[in-house]
Image (cartoon, rainbow over all chains, first blue to last red; front, side):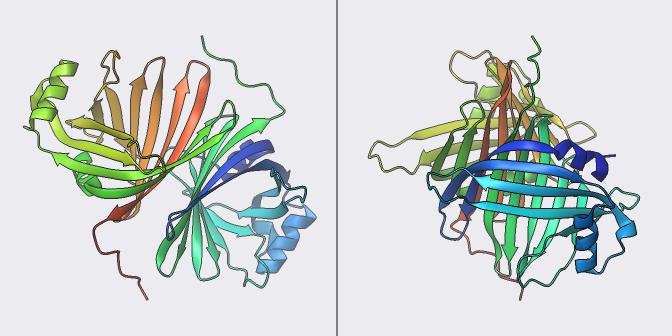
Length: 177
Length: 177
């Protein structure tokens, strides 16, 4: 069985991200790329505890946390930046559990869920205003991660995205030849 | 347990496809869109039998088949077209089995494999010259299908693609409100 603690540990590092969004309503696609830093957060890290407080959740139930920061690579001199914190609470017997994420401005904090597929992929469901995002994250190798996500609102799924993320700053795995 | 026969039946229809390719080596992305027609092939269809003969496989073991045809939507007046045939052989007790696909020109026909994830997604592995393609196909709803694929060669995964496919020619599912 996959463990949320191990999975989030595997995510830690600097990643180059190629992202595509498919708008399913107007059928247009958008491309983006950027750098993504993911840092482990200990169960007693101030950011993890603060997020629990936002959600009114006992920090004793923190299993693992991540702090993310990204920077889009664009032609524009104006930098597009972002950051967020993710906290996974203690898993149940099946390895699934509640997930807390930095809520969007003015959004009522509502916990999401994580669980694992039979292939070890991590599934996240995060509530957003008027709908939810479902994300699937899986590793093709230690240094290559994929993420696909679907945004669903009252009229059904209206946006899909796919990211290919390559770990930076470590030696690539040796070819088996 | 998911059944290959039912899954391929669900695929039948005309689809609008938004496709993105991420080249993992030069880190460039390409977008494409097109129409995709998928037709069921009966176990005694001449195309299915011919494909079995190409692979030296007994046509008695055909479980289900699909005939695909696509047409890229581009600004160019020259049409980009393609077609292929897919035949799934009788599944084992776990629902997995061998998969035959129209081989590329000059390629030695070598069967692929299909199996299902715990979430009902279909996984395909198809050998290509010097490597393999792994594809995951899943339905967000009856009329919305996603496909992600990874192309791996001797030096590791070097290409990823993601398709969002919307069924055309049928009424969209009613919003649950």
